[in-house]
Image (cartoon, rainbow, N blue to C red; front, side, top):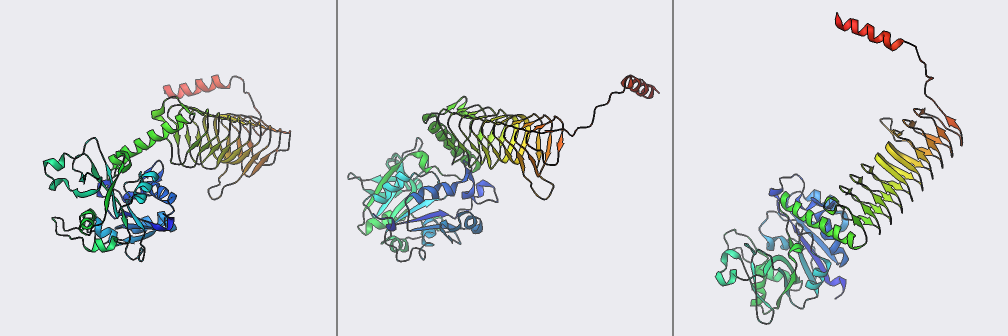
Length: 444
């Protein structure tokens, strides 16, 4: 089957009232990315000819999020899943290939499962699963030949049917040749007055069309309708990431406390301490040590570097080979070159720190004047004394030394010493006289 024989319809018109949020339900994140985009990523591997997202309220939120990745159409009012797919009729006009119907709040359906559905030789393919607790899921009645005879809703099932373990996920792949013809035959003669996509199995059977079941793991078809369900899926996502990285040669001292984003990249022989958080856009090279309570987002760390504990790397922090970033150091939009050391209690933003430079404790780059950001350039082998303020824009030359406690506002030439602190004075006996005076005042 060629890619042009595939279309995808993602249903996302539910109101998501249980989320109690102004944000559209399918835009709530898993691993730092909206759940809808997890699904779209997997869909894009199939390279479908058409992608349609059916929404109800908050259409603009979904449109702004997906951009030109898919066509967004509106279902208003919401009259059931069958009616929702009907909203894609114009977008799929003339399409006769396989239409995969997915749900925006069921984000973890794998590419392999989608392919299995698309490649199954049947006019209607339903994705089934066998949960530990079948609860009130609809049951799939399969005949002796493995074909699907019916979907029976729990409330309508007899005791024998309720004993069936194979359940309906709601996800389908349907021949585009028959899809809208069958949808037109769906009735809303039910208690809810809605048009159900599940009726397609019965309608297909009446037309002697072939129906089949593809099996999936329960985790793949977990839906998200509340904050607690979102947290449960996040937990599964994180455990999957942890297992993946440990299998690829990463050591985690306390895996349950390490959190990854959807796109985190970690090399081999990396050691990660407890309570480390990776936001989106992080790449960690081989042989890096990331100590406890470190937060990294939008940053790259090169081979052999050591980060933390209690460090924060913000977006566009590029940490070179064998760099030391110590405790309570924050770095943002800065290139820290090979062998440099920023060992503790410093802020480096909008800067370059040259190879083998040493940044003393309490150093800050003063990069913001309340309106604009400015750059600080620290040369190779420079030594910045403790408690120094480098007021950008400013250049510190190669090999220069900045005396502790200095405020640097202009260029420091290579190999120069710059000191701006006031000359120390000592007034003998002053402290004793001060204490006597103050105590007298207090006793009055």
